[in-house]
Length: 272
Image: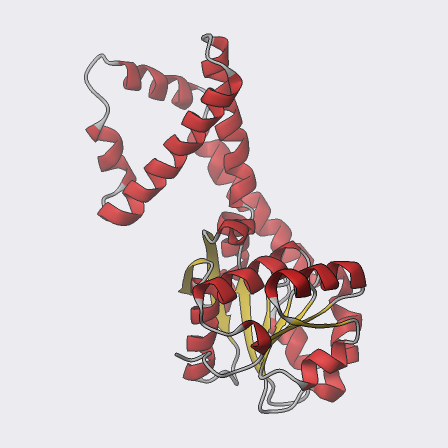
């Protein structure tokens, strides 16, 4: 295991950071005492300490100096000041992983000491239920062991794949933003069932499970989504009527445009 016996520090303990902490501890790849976190909000840190048994501090330097692997889980707009604050504590022995959306590796290479080992990751909010989809791009100084460590950490909270950095904006548009594209689909499917007379709770349960089941079929069978669609689309049946309605509404173009526009926004954020 690339992460075993190494200390992991989180700069930022918001939703994504805390989800990752919980995931790697639950997966058993590190002990709670090997995880540290810093944040400006002490009460939240104290709650995490009580829940997970991790080390906490409001001083970033304390966590950085005590960590072998550093995960930057801060918002892109605060990253500049955070990197300036961390620079003096980053040594060649440390691996730095960032999950800030849209921020290229070149930003970190310019802000941190020459030769810093960097890995850029784009996870998504499903890390909170250990079902994240994460894209991982290693920096020029990252070692194969560094990449293995990043894959191990993010695989603990879902599925992680390596991609070249130029595709990280596409990852952001697809899986980073993707859960927010699916939530309205689940709600709309449930609305349709409510219109037909079903109670809201049952409709939401069936709609969410339907999406989950369909996703698992794609992942576990390895079949093309079109093949799976054809398996349940009988001639003149109910399903083809529903698919026809979706195609009339332009569902494919709508989802393609959602991913494209989110990807474009990621590129814009990376230029600021």
